Image 1 (cartoon, rainbow, N blue to C red):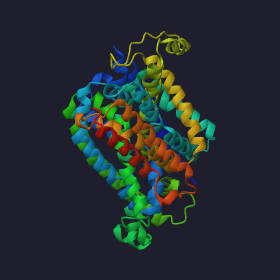
Image 2: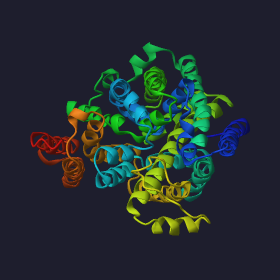
Image 3: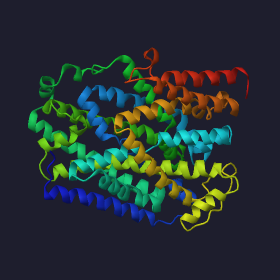
Image 4: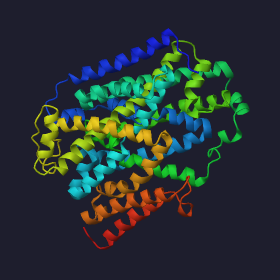
Length: 481
């Protein structure tokens, strides 16, 4: 059971007050164009780029705690190492190319390289990929754990705190709050490790009290299960938040260096979270709900104020990712899908009228800038509602990650990455078919599986990737471009 003292409550509510203040203060910044609303004027310097990227990439802290509690250092092997590798690949192969395009979003690149039909399908897959559902679920569960609120009240508070300032401030508010959350997330986990060492001991304690498999690289999991997480880490290459940060960077060199520096910070943060997970398993071997591993460890070892700061660190880790995913989802729904589906602007005008504004939209193909912030704000509300429904249907953070990554990555990966390399391009027809049947194959394979047992014992991501690559290969053989 979680018990908070007055000082802990003050620390936590002070954090939320700071975030709301920073978010709404950023909303008052002059935004002379829609590009300012979406990309903060493409002005991110190296320190700001690193802080916003590092904090954005680590929202699933309760899921990390659950994974560490169950499988030990295997959490690092599956949730850390693959992402370092693909982040480095992204930095060296894509970061500068993305910034040089001066586009706004991932679907813009798909339309530039192929056609509007492929861009719309890519937008739909991006919307699924960037759902903030797991982070809404995590934050709401965390609020329930700390304050005993109902799920409805927890979700309502989550919406007010995490979405309200984005509605007005856009990317400026996202970036400025990320800077604050970057500091708190490291501070929170840096606090708990010394208390664990003082309370229990160091490495010898862990070796004596952990199951032997927790200190092995595989944690008792099969090689195929671990290998599939490396494929899911391909998510990095198609992650719209990575692309968005590169578009918003001051220049290509800033984007490339920023990602490489971020890998170092992720390594440090992974060390802190993995160590805390091991202490939780050693000190609390009989937890019935491993998702509560970190909070229960905090209750065991932290005094007042330090406990409040640790919980603030967990809040900051979740909130930074929730904000970004909510904003990118809103942009995808309102701009990347809405603008492209509207031929004469009438649908957008109707939506705009709901917010008391009119829309004057230009073709996204002739101008990569978004046509109106109004539709993005509309998309923010719709995205949040859809994510709540998904969180209710799939009430498991790790399962949402797995399901979304498994079905979407096979569709997006090949067409998107190839679009940045002229020699890899195929015609828009085969790009569309590769994207469509890549994700449909994985989706059907997932549906055919029962209780995690899939046809021929093969994980769904593999057949999807094979089909996508196969269609892409046919397009190259035919000499389509």
